[in-house]
Image (tube, rainbow, N blue to C red; front, side):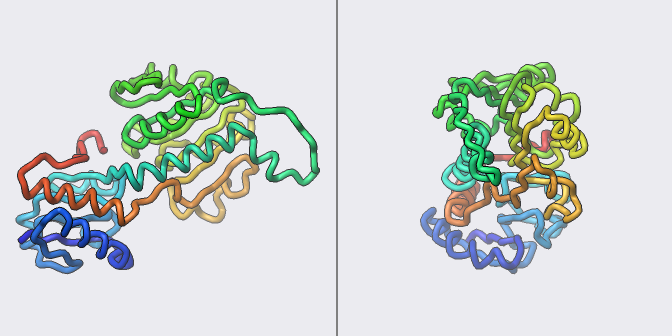
Length: 310
């Protein structure tokens, strides 16, 4: 029998228990699933980094930790974790949610919807927006989420440029890598979308220098991670008109403190980390497949490179 510990906030158990049991049954596994198991008997941990489990030393027969979140910055530095770690890559739930959110806000800025929706002076401005072919978009981060968003936006006619730490290839997308590639990717972009992980290499990547590279009046969309952005540099760029508007879903401190200037800035939209979340129904199938693979001696999916941080 395979022993599976669910280690997340207690309120999540009600959401996940049914989907996980259904997925594990469908995978043909003989298992015991619980929020309470003797540490020495646990084979797999279905894990959220904000759970009470922080010391993995007692889990002497542990085979893998299966993270429920796409982000793993809250666990990669844990020195007591020595077994394989996987992150959540869920095309049917997490990825699709991100594609919908990114596409929606890209179109919102591209079409100038804010000016039409909030128009207290009843100004009649019939100036049409440009077509998508004339609105270059840059996506920083070309992992599963970035590539899915790039595909969706190219399908709508946007010219998309992508940047990642290592070189990627995606049909219809100009892909860059490395420091020089970052400058190329950002230069003259009119919409910049951040989908990078939170690692030491990405901390404050969006600073005064990089914010000066897009076209004047560009839009910034961040559903990735808060520490990617130097907040003060972004406010300066907004005040100067270099960045026309920033739509931010993630922040260095969450919930965003009430006194943070992003709340009151007229060119900032704050959303409460809702760009994409793990959906229990689809995520459970990803978890069950990895446990099936582990028990069958097959390679696990979505393994985390602990050195790279994702």
